[in-house]
Image (cartoon, rainbow, N blue to C red; front, side, top):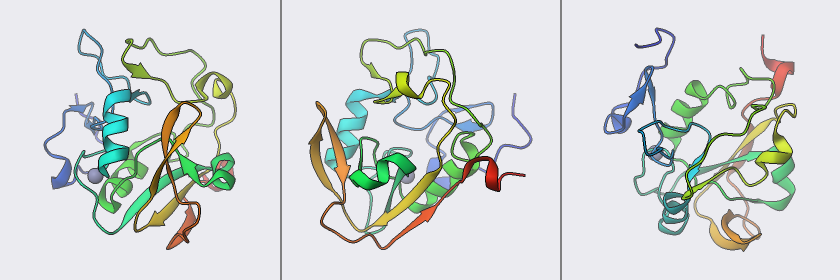
Length: 175
Ligand SMILES: [Zn+2]
């Protein structure tokens, strides 16, 4: 069944499966019984995307404009373990993702059931039930891959972003 309020799917995402009218990002893991775990990340695809400069949503190579999504608390560290997006996928994701769109006030309170190859968000247990944080878009021409807490991350330390913009500011800006 398709949700009539689901945003239009850009042509560049037509190759991906959908659930309820929403595109399943390339990086979203799938359980053995075929369920998509929205919000979780396929660890192999995450690393592949970070190292290969691929977009985490469409899985295609990024060109000269790419965007990292950072939470407010990530900004001082200038890095994120989540792959970059191209501008089209960013616009679609901001419209489609309830957390990014400011439509969820709190993180999910129950842990997701993950297969062994799946990585939960790095600090998911700390975030569980916590108020949702504002997100920012960091627009870049490139990033560096760094080692970070036993995983790899995209860093823009030492380079100046083209711009940094708030994507959501929680309940303050939502009607
Ligand atoms: Zn993309």
